[in-house]
Length: 306
Image (tube, rainbow, N blue to C red; front, side, top):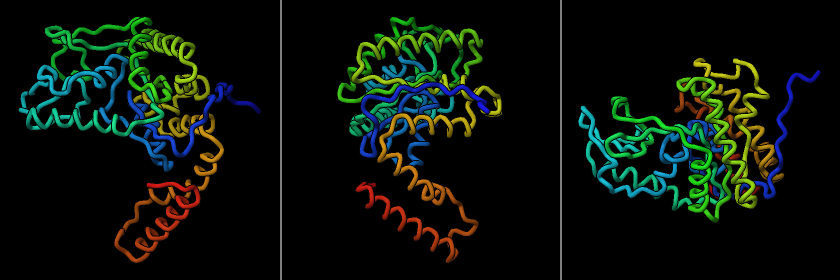
């Protein structure tokens, strides 16, 4: 009995391998898939700038001067924030906030990824009315200070093309987040996703050797057509959905050696996630030592370094 219609995924011209240096940036789904990659034993840098939803905000953190004073503000609790970054980038001093931005930028470019996974959530963005600065996060400041705008397909293409040029030596894998943006209305959410999808399609055709697309959004909608595959808020994919999408990604994009590694690594992954009641007990210490031995064996088998 066939209960779903699987979404056909075209295999990439150059499959990913265990020795690829990978980084994930973008929306919250970049965090989800990046964390799942890390749990599977892959070296990956996950969202160093925090969650960013639209192409313009991603480009901003890659190109703006982190020492520019206008990028920062102090809230009523005397905490400093950066308009371009996620809200968890905050500090007691302006200098510390600048340093956090510089550190995040440095981590990404020094990581020098040969594979960059960019997850886009929407084409909507917010601009500060007084300065015309495009923000990555409004930091719960008054809505009257911002104007909400939507990027056209042409703007999305130009912005994403600039990101591709910044990472010329990297393969870029674009995904569109399955998250449903109800605040725009569900019809507007679909229009936003469609704009992103059409822009990515233009780039795929223009840069077939550099740009790939993984259909996380379509898998969530077409293969997982049930609210049980969403979290309690009914907007975010559930953990089961994330695991399923990761499985589809890994089966489609990774080479045979990586597939064997994932199979061998799975017991180690489960062991590493185990949280004993008494970490200091002899049994727990012995279990940890055995897990480390298995990890050493598998890294030697595949000639990997951690």
